[in-house]
Length: 108
Length: 177
Image (cartoon, rainbow over all chains, first blue to last red; front, side, top):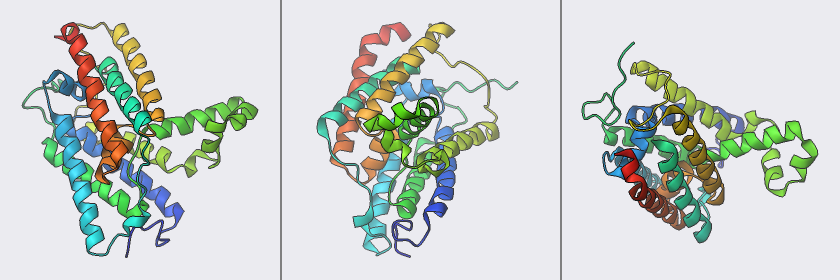
């Protein structure tokens, strides 16, 4: 089955909505198990006390990126159908900066 | 009641960050494989805000170019990201309950009063909310999902996120230490 399954109409949009709950459950569970349910742990990286955020985040990004590459290479995924976040350099730079500020102000 | 783990303690019951990161990475991969897009968070808040405004002031909500786009789905139960965030809440709850660290508390550092902690949390939340709409995503939609598909703007977002966090943390570090 060549993915992505919903855009390729192998699964319906309704099935996609049910999958949303599954994806969220997994995402929330692993985030909590990583300790990222704790605002203190989330911000500790900015005080150089605990690098869990960085480790979790980049492990996930690398697993995702390599996995996507492999799925595409073996023909299980049509990469042209993937939604790539569009590039708006200044809004993305400013937004990221504000979120960094917000984490530090809101987190401890 | 069980003493909560110190979130920063070496021997806390949390998983290895690499194991948890692997789990999140596989979840992200599965989401791309099924949906063609990654995971997110912040847009669910906008979706719900648009809906609340529509209930309270329908004409105003429909007349707002930005928010009316969020109303096209109709019911919130048609919104992928709202359902996903419900899952995140339940998944987190399940994780905390099964690890026996579920507890009602205002988590805070040793030097800050409870009320101050809440005021700062609100202030930080406003900044995160505004920033994530400006960037069209937060640490989930941009850093994680955009990062995995090597989107240029998402990597710029991630760099700016750490820059903003480290700069401000350096300025206020004495408050917390």
